[in-house]
Image (tube, rainbow, N blue to C red; front, side):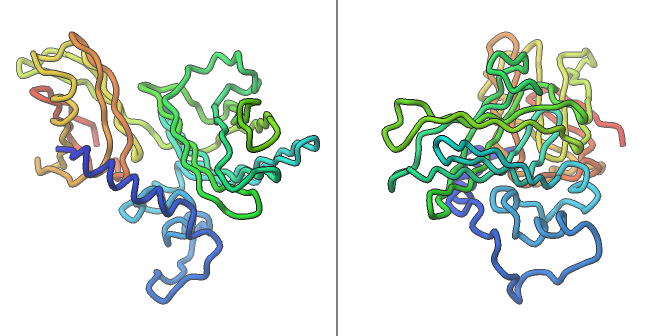
Length: 290
């Protein structure tokens, strides 16, 4: 069963060191270099931004390579001197992490008040891309620069590899720390982790909902609750291996609704999909094919 309070405390602790490992030299305690994709090896040794928020040690290189990619995309605002630089992404069709650096030369000592949004390839605010739950983590990097991790989370599948999306970062006129700006970068994701789908059934074998599982996230939809609250169902989520043993999983998952519920969340320690055979939610069970 997921322990939400522990997971939330873990996330807050990790946020305090967001991106702190970037650019430092490996120490003797870190694993020696191995052959393979240098980008993947970097995050596996804890040097990349994603690895300061996510515990990636349990993932194989093959799984990491399916959902992680580096970018080097920049947009600048000549009028204000602000600039946006996207460095890396990791995600699946329901969840996307975007690491970027924002530079605001006119910013005072306090963090600037800005927002991040994910739009479709047009980059327009009227984008048809469904609005995700959004979380923005920010750490000062000095000289008016800030290392940021934006987390975009949907209840179901929306993103597709090969389809353009845009990150828009905006600071409005209400922020007294500097000039307003709007910066947007468009790119086409090439790597999104595969998502497995399984049917949730009750004890009688009737279909009651659906589960979506990737190495990074778990999403659920139930058309009935069996008399349990959404909170109780959230706390009852359990992943089992092929032997029927519970897997130790750290994540933050929230279901909402009354007669029917939807929701889910992300793993702080992503899981190998092949390790998961069954998911239990209350009295409901879904079995994933291997």
